[in-house]
Length: 288
Image (cartoon, rainbow, N blue to C red; front, side, top):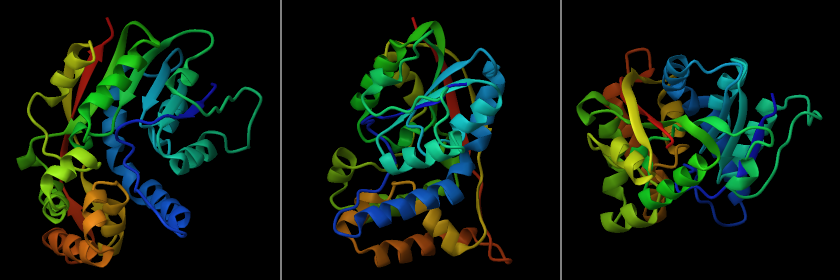
């Protein structure tokens, strides 16, 4: 296995935009919150698609928006050769730690550059994943471009997995994420200029596949409940997603955290834990 991790400007890294002298520390803190609290919420989505595709030895997988690398680690544990790209260097650093725990073995190549730097040297990819939910993407055109470029690095007929939120009525977290929409002012700037949550349409994944020149080849739904040990963990976990970036640009963090906690209150159980059932959807498309 030769994991390759590349910094690439995807339209939806999910990372916080941090400015000022304490920005690097805040960015690292958010990355740790993502890796330790939030990222695991999507494991059922990762595992369901890997099971369906039979990911294992012989799989050469490229993860778009790989973040801190949990999905890549799960694929590598199945015997796959993995590569990943992401715009957030702090998340890539953590992914490198996870995938190369003993440093930099000779068989591991970790590079920094464009998407083309992730191209495998011996054979093209045969699986491409874009798990970061489409409902979180503010620039569909940018993601389309990245998917098209990634498809060019894959062999014909390769699987491309797209992830997205399920129906709003089956996602308890949707009501909480509307806080981000409400606090971001004006809403039009929120949609155009920032990474954030948008309700998913029924055919969003199919439309994206069509834009990228991919051929749909099956879909599925997976239960991905969001569960947290306490209210503080829930707030930290959700803020780490980057879905509240736009709200934090126009409101103080204290206000965002307060209103987020209020929205989470109906989902807090008697023992203090926070639990929100969600359904996520995935589409498997094929390169032409």
